[in-house]
Amino acid sequence: MADAYLPKDGELLFVALGGAGEIGMNLNLYGHAGKWLMVDLGITFGDERTPGIEVIMPDPSFIEERAPDLIGLVLTHAHEDHIGAVPYLWSKLRCPIFATAFTASVLRRKLEEVGLAIEAKITEIPLSGSFRIGPFEIELITLTHSIPEPNAVVVRTKLGAVLHTGDWKLDPDPLLGPTADEAALRRLGAGGVLAMICDSTNVFVEGQSGSEADVRRSLMDLVARLQTRIAIGCFASNIARLRTIAEVGAAHDRRVALVGRSLWRMAEAARENGYMDGIADFVTEHDVGYFPRDKILMICTGSQGEPRSALSRIARGEHPNVDLEPGDVVIFSSRVIPGNEKSIAALQNAFARKAVEVITDREEDIHVSGHPARDELAAMYQMVRPKIAVPVHGEAQHIREHVALAKSCQVPEAIEAANGAVIRLAPGNAEIVSQVPVGRLGLDGRTLIRLDGDTLRHRHRMSFNGLIMVSLVVDRDGILLGAPKVSLEGLLDGEAEAEAATRQIADEVTGALEAAPVSRRALDEDVAETARLAARRWFHKAHLKKPVTKVQVIRL
Image (cartoon, rainbow, N blue to C red):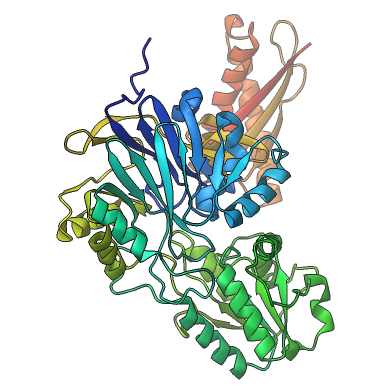
């Protein structure tokens, strides 16, 4: 049977399986002449809605089923929401990978951890490089962002050129790497651009996003005023920020320590590519205690309140090597990612209870976003002049506002679409022509599970409703050979109350089984269901709750 989603020779399709209608977890597909090209393959992180799941990624089933026609994966930059799913999903796709040197360095370390460093080949592309793969001609255009080597990807076919921006901003002084290649963007626009697939994160932010150089000046002044131990929380991937903090420490006679494994991985990749030239070696967390409190400056993971991060462990007094005392200072040189407000507030309150001073970007100019504000978006549209705007990397409200902004910038067509929408960019007017299945996978230990599957649904039920476990031993005729064994999890606080409840549930189950007809005792599943209903019925009557109830039947 012919594949209904095999892109025709005379059409160009765009499909997002992740990252459209949400921030993070990017997975984008371009289809043309029977082949698919993927741009980015990222993750997002779990929260209280996904108990036991820390890493979440797009379900690639649609393109996995078409893996023979997937000719490559192009990575725009090294942030987790753009490359983080590669170690987990590449084995399902087994396609060539293309990235610039820094992104390749970061990804290789991830692939080594899962044993794929040799199998998953990465072709390094130079900054502003170009190459051809299948029916697609690819050109990279250097932009600026909060990580080295962010690239826009120009996808050219005989039907026209598409600019896929990735994450970007227009930073006049990014401190590391060149400024955005606006000349290349204007040349592209002058040659005609069919469509622009563009970052929407800060579409509601007026003006411009600000410069890393401004942050360096603010941190230099702030640390000069402080005479105690300082910990700075920032994103590990913001190499310009790491270098800034290193230079701030050196200027104020402080050694700089890295506290958190992800910081060391990023710093190693940065040194490998020359982005830490001239910066002294960082101090390990094991040696922090040997320095006077006013001679050490620590960079820590956990600015988003992640429970197992360095900052959270320090706040709880559980870190094996680092402590903060009353009068010490924690600087949050980062923004609040939507959804993390509660965890960040809890972390900052924990420090406040320890009389540790907390400084955020509300008090000092110590962070700028890596994403374009409205003036930058307008400038990009003026340079590129696409016929079609397709906003991505934003929630539904961001996408809708970005569509309105694009139209105000005189873009003839703007498409408001979410994950799974099959957008035909050419020929003819752009339109959503179909919808493909999308979903999310969660990393549960070492196993990938569907977030809409039974595992997480049962986990939610148990976390909200508690659990009753009943064990029964019956003879061949289904007659109880002893009192049922009952245990409760997550239901009653008092030991005496719990013991009384288990006795009464056991009595209720015994009565139900003794009253059951012979036909209901012949099969284990009938015995189990009779016991389950009896136990659950009693608990609901007594406590107005309906716990998850599991019954084990042993027949002798």
